[in-house]
Length: 124
Image (cartoon, rainbow, N blue to C red; front, side):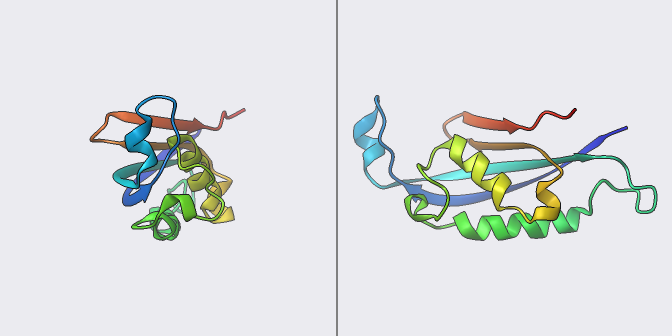
């Protein structure tokens, strides 16, 4: 039996982006409020009754959030082009190793614009 737990966070950040359409506004520095949700999947530990301690997940996500919140995303080391897709990958890879091994899903979205990206790791 596998269970999935999730934790959400948000961050405000600025960026520029080269696009094929709506290019003019995207090339200028602009910002968004981003929302992210990270899910961990694993077996229930009978000793703790948990997949993972949510406090540890929160702590790990706070470390990721600190790298993104109120930053210029173009300048965040390891992010690359500041797309929703790259943000999903960055968040998954920026977690501490003990959490990264259990990540099953990362979702990043911009509520005001209605767009999102989901990164999923298939489970065998």
